[in-house]
Image (cartoon, rainbow, N blue to C red; front, side, top):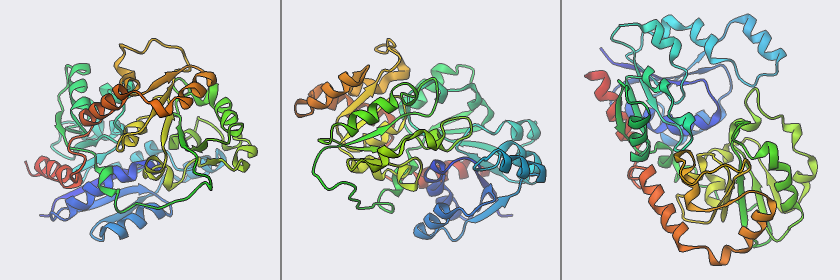
Length: 374
């Protein structure tokens, strides 16, 4: 009987590039692959399926409870809560040979499965950052954990010494899509340096809440630099974080500032390839920016001692500033960027991503197939 695997997509847009190449590669191996998602148009998902030849995949839209639809509409929630979708469709979900997640919402499935042999629960890491939130005990919900490189694998073993999941280094499937999503854009008329400001979404970690407007004002007043303000997708698109109205119209109107609070370009590395300089705090997207070696500037808005903290490992590859004056000084020194930063950036990139020049999707698919076929 044909094996059946469901890829869970109940999260935001940025998860699509991480599960799509493995899903397509797994379907090519003769496995029935369903993308289990919420009700919606799913324009980006469908566009990428058409581009990549994903006609063998099935998009299965799962409804939520009627009362939840009313509540979520009243609360202006952009997409339904995954928890209630799981509850409504639990019986159906348990019929799969494996369920593949790119987030940590497998708890209800794990509990309902109990000691049954299936579904196997598989986790594909959707980021490559250093923050402690990427090394949660919830990894133990999964039978198989697939990570981008040795950096994550080594630390997971260290931070979760009692782990009982299988751990495999699989590469970074998002890189498989770079050629398919390559887009030549021209955002600014001048040939001035382009800075990509990509703050994290967490209130505890993000530079946006304490310094974001000061940073936007700096670039508005310094037209010798161009700025792309494209924060982590969740900052302006996930319940409980920032409202879009918090970004004043004057920043949209500034000719040297491009504001993108959550489009396809903000998640498919269009800006990460286009910009000349990265500016951020702890968002893991900096590692995607490292695909091409360029200057990195990090904002230590909390004045923390970071030098021996693994949660800030990425900061070793660039200049760390604590205020706008420090940012101005760092930008002024771009012509003499220290060679040590460049060398460390290349080293961290190699540790973070397993064979980034080779497709990860087929490797991930094989590891999932090995798990379900035993």
